[in-house]
Length: 60
Image (cartoon, rainbow, N blue to C red; front, side, top):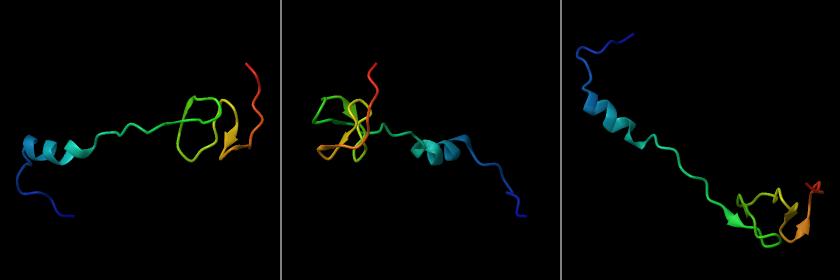
């Protein structure tokens, strides 16, 4: 296997890793219960997706 002849500088490594940040997932408001939910997914609070009920949700 190939080995580096010289050590990589810290700045070089940190520049490469500068894009490793995590992205915050976007949320949309559920049209039925107005709770935040992930886009294109069933609402966990009311069980609706695209205007119709897909899941039955237990009451708290």
